[in-house]
Image 1 (tube, rainbow, N blue to C red):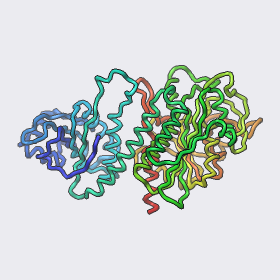
Image 2: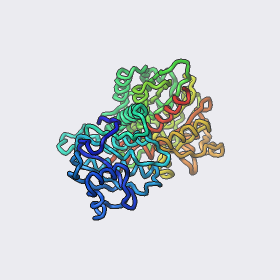
Image 3: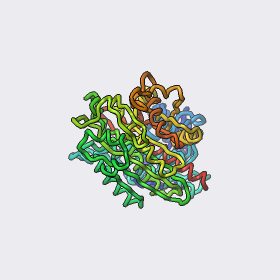
Length: 497
């Protein structure tokens, strides 16, 4: 879909559909008032008949409105004009996008830009609108043979530019929004692939393609090199699978003489649980256990497309976690890259083992900050559901940066404690630490485990197990936390100017 921002004459605009807002008490927005005047009260008569349900986001399509060039007008109910929140706006936009899916038209012009949202200026409205529209129209159907019922998105979507703003502001907003949605789409496409079509080798090929297309520097370690490095955590998880393990770094250097931001993405391309086998019901969704690695690739794509003045290194440990005669067993003790020994209590707590080696490996880059993103624990779903990503950090300044970016992007996080009192729960009587904590707070003790390997780093951990994908018959990747991390990086670029 092509997006643009222009000053539009509502009366003469010949788009297939115009979108205008109506407020509580049948109050017109500026564009709706002009529309009603031109149509000699036609809009008012529609409202008086009660055809538009007064529920935020509800809409009605009007055809051939008198005096209007456009053949369709979508009236959208937006609630109380003076009290619209960001949440209201996102609901309105999502409902609007769903209504457009049913229309199947080529060009849309939206006048929803003339409404005022608390804490959401024009640029944020446009960016979030594009992200929500793209999410609504996203469909992973490349493996289907029958596509006769495929819904095609509009070819063009035009935002009306309020008279108080300049097109320069809008142009920069469009660039950012389009790059972020492209990065998000890459993340979704990779995560939605079935595990047989998204192995560590295939992910490595996708990383090579991304590096070639976007001018990134890539380094891929195979099993021999990983053994030479001493990554015992990654090798332990990989030893049950015949699929070759990979360890990939991707580097984008948009500025010299700057310490890098290191992004680490968990890349378990299928997690059966290993010897501690997961339940059969829903196990197919364990293809999403590489969502962290897919997010790293999506973020780097967006950053490179925007040519941001920042230095980023992405790290992706990639493996399957399968049961076999060679698989790691409960009670085994392994030695990680850091030198710490780990007693493996549960083979289904494998993500932290591969992240441990990645965290230690990141030290060689002398990073400014390190952020890992991982579908790590089921406990975070119990705690936070599918709304907020769990965040734990050993650096308050970094945590606040991420939290601010979450509020700005609406890809939000919720901080959880990483107090010393939790650390004894991962003690082991036969090794330095255990890979599973005793007692409650399983998401926190998982982060405590990771913190043992991040003592030299300014580090934050994002547990995206509840937010990276939607479960059930309509299962699909959400692309989170691409928008969150992109806002974090954009803020850093702006602060460094």
